[in-house]
Picture: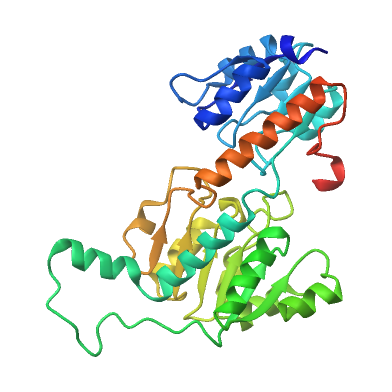
Length: 328
């Protein structure tokens, strides 16, 4: 298949340098408005394209893939997360799926620490007072937060991002604990000075902070459910820069309102941009609009990976970031 004749449809606006390079390489149809495509628009795009470049805002399910026709051969996802795509149905229909792993690791880990510190040191409360003009000067007991050094951080999901969070937290003097499907190799545990917990329940009850860094899969849906949230220490803080579905958001909201959890820093939400309005009212909660990977460098690197995956496929080879069943 010739790269020059390859028809590519991109569902959202991408960084300008990425779009420019795509126009040089492929017969590409770019998004002019950056509006999220409807289900029918996505199906139509799949019917006329050799390659679809979706993002996490594009849910592509079995019913849509069954209407896709025979032309579509590759879904080159812009992003590492793939829970919005029906990978099994795509494979059954002979459609390859690629993603962009690794490029958001450092940026997301940075944001995890930013949220942890913002909640613990009450940064948004301080900003609100300054911006309102109500600050009357320093006081010995004003805006007292907590020290993070010497405290226990429990990392839920110790992949690339979880390990990057651990390295940063170690620099802040935190003690690293983690729960993962598989225990890390001894040399990595030693490097991170990390303690593995086979039982998530036991870890949750003993740590001062929890960082959610696992993907959303059927087995991780509501992994932090009401029962597990109740195991947390009353002053503990939970941070999520992974996927909102891992936490039962309504249960979390109830417990935060009742003072049963110390605070939360959330960059992702269970129902996309539809956030429980009660969360917005709480002073011990920091909410961000899915900014974890939002750096110029990270988004450009994601685009480069998409282009390499498409170009490699166009040249008749396996895309380097092909999603395979063992990853699911």
